[in-house]
Amino acid sequence: MHTSTRRWGATAVAALLAPAVLTACSSGGPSADGGDASTLTIWHYENDESAMGQAWARAIEIFESEHPDVTVEVEKQTFEQIQKNAKIVLTGDDVPDVMEYNKGNATAGQLASQGLLAPLTEVAEEKGWTQALPASIATTAQYDENGLMGSGEWYGVPNYGEFVGVYLNDDLFAANGIATPTTFEELEAALAAFAAAGITPLAEAGAEYPLGQLWYELVLHYGDRALVDQYQLFDGDVDWHGEAMTQATEKLAEWVEAGYVAPDSAGLTAEDMGTAFISGEYPIMVSGSWWFGRLQSEIPFAWSQTLFPGNDLHPGSSGNLWVVPTNADSPDLAQDFIDITLRPEVQEVLAQAGGLPVAADDVTIADPKTAEMTENFQAVLAEDGLAFYPDWPVAGFYDVVVSQLQSLVNGSKTPDEVLDGLEEAYEQGKADLVTP
Image (cartoon, rainbow, N blue to C red; front, side, top):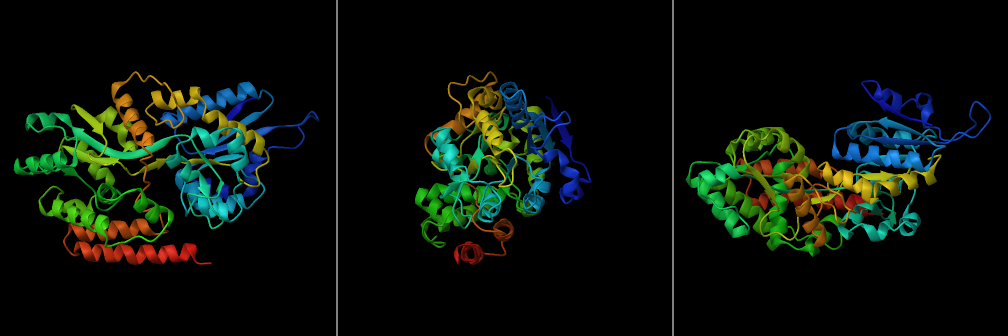
């Protein structure tokens, strides 16, 4: 009885492509003394110090105490390794019993539609997962026969969350006599006040995801849940030149023109944005909860985190999914492990370490900033307010969103032209997914 951990280095891809290397993945067969060997093999890509890594370690401890005859093998992958090689690995016989995997149509949905993931609906109902998880979290667990998210069988189980909010440099707000905004109108007033003081208010990055998330916050400000369902779940047609899309794109262009977004931000990366905010250069950064731990450890000034003012819907989702490959040798053990990750004692570890639990009640968090972020997330869940991410609906849309919004920032395209470009790529991608 033991837990072993394997870390994958430069040879990881070669190992993934060579089933003979993965003999530890075999969960059955006789032991050396003639008895039955029982193994649970877990693949995940969280580092040991992260909130998720600490929570999974606690889940493994509990699993081992309840299954003393089972050997747990933990194999550390990277996100990119699993993303690129999952289909190849899962078509073989030497597969993990349970694996962390990305949610969405082009990832978990694709594997589910190809028969490579085991459906979990029956066990989800039996173990109460369907009742424990909020609706907008559970959406990422379900996929139809075409691999489209939001309906059909459960093929994965999320047990933590993430969301996009607003990080504020409280010292800059105080030094300039500007009140912390609690409404959209107050946000715009704060942006104008900083600009009038010669301070660019918004830390941004147009070469990667951040600018798209700011645009999507604006779409959600003017839109509603029906638009989200049309956009993300193909529940109807998106009106790309309707009120919400038009107002959001024109508002972003207006903010750029007013100097609220730096002209050179079109070429900046998320790392550029984050380090600039951490250095105290900008008063506001709109980005995800994944920044929290780094900001907590590196920021030298007083700061806070809040939801996007005036919004009922917010970019965000469950975290990654635990999935069970169809060819897993120990699916029952995998299901037991997944169930443990949703228990209060494991969700408590997530909460205290700065993760965002999705099935935790009455958790008292000692650190005030961690508590602030968790309370904001719980407020979103209470309103069923997660609206996923702007690049999710169709394959390749991330690059299109980045490119089109870069064109908006540098002035080479009008808001209407940007919406035309987004619409063309989205509708083609949607047709590829839903056309028999």
